[in-house]
Image (cartoon, rainbow, N blue to C red; front, side, top):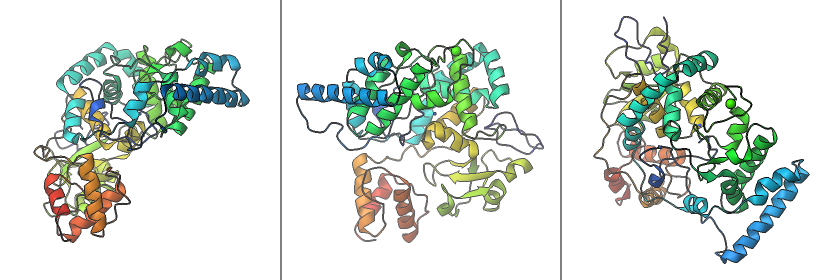
Length: 440
Ligand SMILES: [Ca+2]
């Protein structure tokens, strides 16, 4: 039994007709920031909290003074750590505040983008067409990358396509300014400081030149949008010209993404995800967090959505079952490689976007069943209200923060079970109305 080369391959039995199936941000990432999702670069935005970014609401002059004081303090601490005064002078010493980064970081989007809308944009016809052209233009590089890292070209191309529209959108913010701004004050001081030190490491080691350090307002750089720590720890000078260039060298950028995936545990020749159908009475309490072999899911009634059968090799693999839009939407078995891509960007939608685009680049369809596009998603305020209502009814959401995390989903499932509903942990407006109604 041989696996199909495509990691998304559904690993079907040989007798059947084959069907083929990093932001590197340390912060939790969700898809709530519609403003960040431009038509082009579909980078799932950083999770945004409600906290104001700046403290005292002081005058611009007082803020400038505090920033100057912070720069002095950082410089002193960095020199004490062994970084050279010259290095500090050409980086933090010249930094100015990035007001836009502070604004973006502290704004709370009203609406959450539905998962199907994100996937549709990720695997848009334009992005598929461009990706296929890029794959054809860089055949030699992709051949070498597959041989070296064992990560399929479609996955690498999909990351390239989603992170920067194949290198067309890199961001033109000065990274040192953005990171210094975060490190100075607000809710991301720890992140900003760690990333600043990583930036110093990058320049000090000679891997990059200071003037190369441009990227997104949030500090992600180049065609694969690496933040400095990821850049420092995983980026590769694949074309061996002495400069680790994620901005203009396709070889360096794609190899860096491949290296990051491989070192995060990528398993060659295994799939990322496979769509399944399940029986009407399927027990959704087992979805999302329970890991079982494909054979065990099959025993519970899960079947490949294309009507074929899983191969014996596939049956041995462990997977979780996701119902990202609840029981009415598509269901997916997700494998180890799904979690590996999640290390690149901690968002289920992001990984589904990568997998879907990767499949499409290989001429395949990853998700066949329709999404419940008539569902109205919850706003941030709705989610807060839902959390309050669930908590009041005795279903602990672990606080009220407007973010649907594991504790909130557990509470939703428990409420659904208690009300005789499929415990899929998924809420749209109609179910919200029931949760908000008096009674249990
Ligand atoms: Ca290079």
